[in-house]
Picture (cartoon, rainbow, N blue to C red):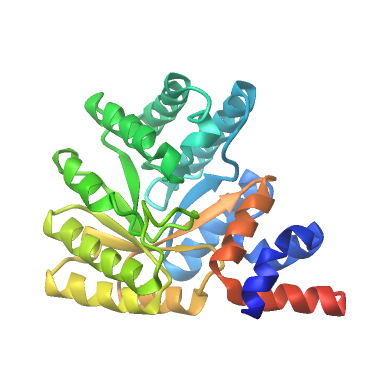
Length: 301
């Protein structure tokens, strides 16, 4: 209860404190920071990365074009560093204008998909909250129908619609990142209880793997990590048939253990100056971090 209270008071906490505490989640302000972290993760642990430019829900086309240019630069940096086998790109549709105009956003995302294909780099389209689910899936389908095969999607286990969305897209044999989902949604469209979300995650993971799809198992939740270990073993999957995925700075000992067991694991590596919204969501997702904020505020750290 105390941690939740602190989370509710986040808007009152000075931004420098939030930045200090949440810096572990973010590579830095600049693309070079993300490339450095990507190299370190691979050299030190054998982990892969997906690089994300922080920012979403843009309010102008000019801003969306700026975000697109930043993602194009990520692709160039991955290619220049010969990191194709190590790193991919993640993009948020609303950062590219999906909330402004669907055709405008599609053109931006297609340009990124074209460059990613030309450079041999995998790109994943992130999933945001439910006002954008249909439009995001539509963008994905159009890209696949236009021959962009190195593009993946994200499905959220908390949403009631996700199993049907998965079944509706089986013909595309999508590469899927399966996560719980962190956006606040109504009970009408989402499961909100911890165990029911876990149960749906487990059901979806089985359906994905039984359908022969590649899955990025994106979770830090011990019961789900343990369940996934059992499922991939039961299906006799090789290490290249799936991967685990985790956020930068979250449960690093678990990450290292998963890698030590011989599983592939990809780390979500965000960077950029638009760090506050991302940091706030991470802290809301992990209320235990609230105690650190309270200590920093009370002790002036």
